Image 1 (cartoon, rainbow over the protein chains, first blue to last red):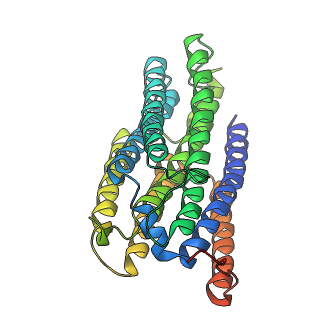
Image 2 (image 1 turned 135 degrees about the vertical axis):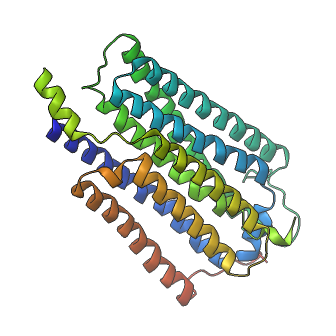
Length: 203
Length: 110
């Protein structure tokens, strides 16, 4: 039992390491162009809504807490609390995606989606297109990971409701928790890097 | 059955609830600080502070929410190796792009 648990945890981490490198590639590309066009990056970043971004950061940290609590109650064999905290995590994920949808629709309204409709005042229009390509690629991949996570989260909820759960057998919940916390960590880096560039110049 | 239950209890470390709440409030505080500091002009230090806070938050999540602190050594090795390779990719790529002028801004971009 012990060895099985160790190997599943290790397997999950191996997958997360590939995810680190996957998002790492996006962050590296971001870093190269931020270094190349620092002023354009700051200008483009000022069109993002810091308040919505900060609220989403808090929502995601809270969802990480509810996920950690779900794992905690799974370890103790408390089925009811496990289901409650898994559903809380799911709801917080939905809130995050709702706020993200609002932000995306604001970008469409303000002509900030890269493409023929893109409009950006000032000398940095081309570089700003590049910034918004990174913005949509990185937040989009992050949101996709959240959607996948929210689909997967329904499985342990269903299993727990059908009593296919016990204090001995709950490694799937712990492994899912690792995935969910990883998605939170990606956002922990996305928020300051995308939203908080050179804010002191523009308040 | 009771044997496997006992064996399992040895295998898992149950983190006290107050640890989770302490980490949660620390993460909230660090989020507040990173937003506040972004509006203060520190020159090039702004990026360093933002990254420092983000790395601190990530380490807190990894050690406590993801239980790596209480996990096996092999898990710690895997996690460290993952971030080490990320660091290698970032450091070597950035040192090239920052010093060699590889990117030529296309005509009409400025």
